[in-house]
Structures are given as C-alpha cells and as structure tokens.
Length: 42
Image (cartoon, rainbow, N blue to C red; front, side, top):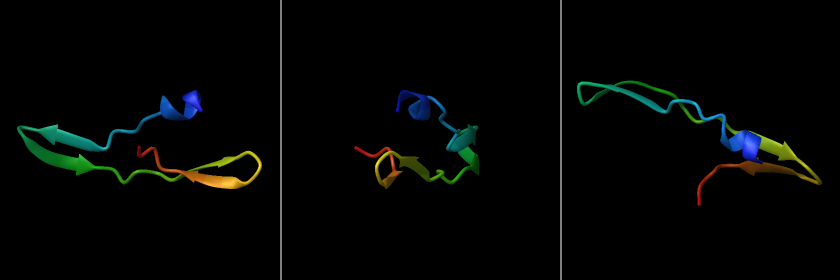
C-alpha cells in the first residue's frame, strides 16, 4: 500500500498563477482476494 501512495503524478502545472497543463488521475486496482479500485479519497 505504501508503495502505491508514493508514486504520485503531477496533477496540475501552474505558471504565473495560471494552469498551463493538467493530468487526469489514473485508476489503480489492487488484486488481493477480489479486485478493488483505489481512488485515494478520504
């Protein structure tokens, strides 16, 4: 679990107070007993 959390892509690139690029968050699936999607929201 900790290894998944440490690989964080850049979501927004900001220059001069303006967003110049953005990246859509990837979907992560962990296969333990049953596949489960991870969204990292609390």
